[in-house]
Length: 373
Ligand SMILES: [Zn+2]
Image (cartoon, rainbow, N blue to C red; front, side, top):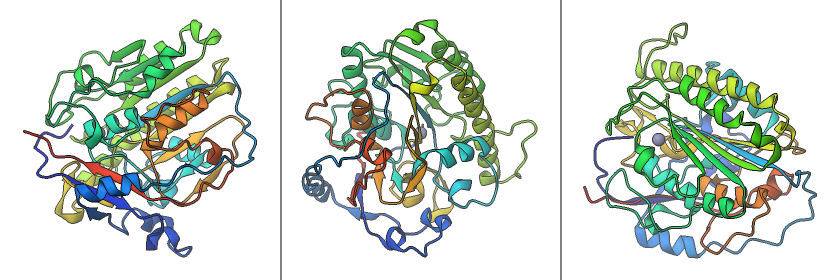
């Protein structure tokens, strides 16, 4: 949710083997600030996109995935990659740090774009936002493209989402969802987010996930938490300081507590042992790097390098340090449900890598189309 217009279209190719990625000596903390994305033209994007080689034959790695698994996707708006598990010195996210230790962590993951509308449209479609049918507005409305929840719904899997900004009411992201809930009591502000919503998001998530019907069916559940988005509100009992990054850190700590509460709730459910949990973000945030604050408008490492961790039944914890993208989540989630994807999804399933396969190196494309406003 960033109010000013996008000034120009741009895209970046994240090379599979940048200096930061390939140097064993590079400390994790440097990954978020080094290797700023190379800028390519729109023509480069098309060329690079079509140049992606076909997926290699699946490796013979056994998937210890329950046949009746569920998937929970928890996305946290504006969550930068430089969290404690990548060397950030403040313990601002203890619950996510604990989860990351147990998860398959893609430590060089990228969002599809650098602000919510483009990034999440790309995530749901498994395609670059430039390729999608959307209104020309900065806060685009998506209609007419295949979003992966539609395929889940068609396969009889229950689909539910909990969102925390009024943009999600009209974005078209609800396509394919049986239940689509916006947290109550918030108003639409296209320029920012003044609301404090994590407690409501968590409560609503408990309400939907706690439905006894979930004990006897398969489901996909998505909650998008929004509090780390600016404005950086202060929260009682959390004080990392008064500056923008300090208060942002406080928002992360606050959100982390509610994500932790939800993880505790999930752990007590009968279906927990057969449920995959994915955590990621829609973009990062800038605090003066490149003379920028907030997000959107441009593509920089700080804006598109995001956390991506997967806790899957039977998968051993490990970190993967080659570039991957949230564009891979649509084919990954379809694969987890055993649904054969159609040809519209450009990402690659990460399921074999989650279960220990070496996925190899490949480039990642980040895309920020111009808007007409
Ligand atoms: Zn966002």
